[in-house]
Amino acid sequence: MRTRIAAVAMVAAGIAALTAGPATAATATGEVDTATCLTVLNQPCISHQAQGDGFIGVAQVSADPSQLTLVQVEIRTQKAWGSPWETVATGTTVKLGSAKAVTPKVSTIDLKMVCATAGPALDKSKQVTTCGYPF
Image (tube, rainbow, N blue to C red):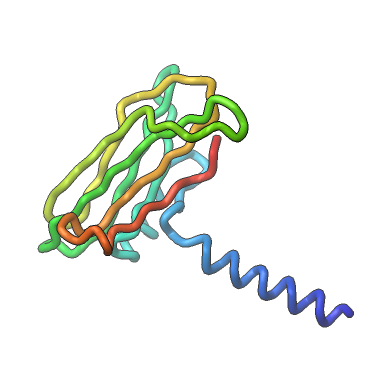
């Protein structure tokens, strides 16, 4: 029985390691983990940062210097448990190589989440979208 439990725990840990990629890498202070962002191409790194009485959403992506790159970051809010998430602020950047986008400041008491889409601007099928944990 202990062998089965240990095997299930190892499988669960492996799945968690596979699904918890660098796309949501942020430190406890909300700063983007730039070391991780630099090592994985076309995967958005997201964070939120306090700014006065609100916060901003930040996303950055590392890319080949010759690639036209898109990065779009959104702040989504949820008014009540189970209600739909609504986008309340967006920031978008399109440029050659690595890129960073920042949303306007948002002040709300609603549940919040930062999401980002990034990748080659001219090939939507290679763009990656990720969201952080609600806060």
